[in-house]
Image (cartoon, rainbow, N blue to C red; front, side, top):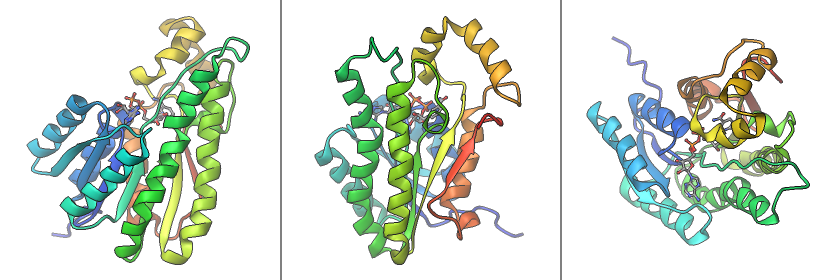
Length: 255
Ligand SMILES: NC(=O)c1ccc[n+]([C@@H]2O[C@H](COP(=O)([O-])OP(=O)(O)OC[C@H]3O[C@@H](n4cnc5c(N)ncnc54)[C@H](O)[C@@H]3O)[C@@H](O)[C@H]2O)c1
């Protein structure tokens, strides 16, 4: 029987796999044969992801990582390379959201969003690229957001931080193509996770948010973490081998 798993033997380092989209993605990549190093601040959440992967016979481990620290990100990539015997794929997915009108927004919240969202993608790339080169090439996927390409009230800082990831990913793809390293960015739309609580509160609560989603999203509903995971699998597997520098918007038809 043909083995349809797409990542057999692949060594993955990723961030934010204690959370919803990250956990669903880690599980799917492991089901496709990848071995995974998870960097997250939420160690117990990340360990639960590992437990779920191991329960299905997969392999993953946690490296406690605050992605706002360059030292911690460098330790994550070095530990991943040492324990996995190299790195083929990196997925920088950790993220923060804060909402508020621009006139009310605190500079320290702006800085927090930029430190975790785009800066961690920069630090991750900086420290993973030497390992990808050692592997003879590889793949980097970044998580931005629909908010990077379509604005909404209360989302100025978050949109700006995710827009920075889109720009970073495009330039990084151009820089790394000669090394056979592909870089693509995924922009999830409204995905039903607690991550959106700041935006939901800003919109006036869950009922108001669901009404807005049903009007804004052509498919009429929020997406699931699993629907993002399957798109990340596409980006990090050979299924997208001739694709780099792109932005994949998975949003039920909004953008
Ligand atoms: N949920 C959505 O609707 C949606 C939409 C568009 C984009 N996104 C993006 O998808 C990604 C995952 O979102 P999610 O919905 O799974 O959210 P989540 O809150 O469940 O996951 C976020 C993860 O990032 C980790 N993290 C945050 N700060 C960190 C830090 N300093 N160091 C290390 N890890 C840190 C958290 O521990 C968690 O594991 C984020 O980048 C988010 O911006 C989400």
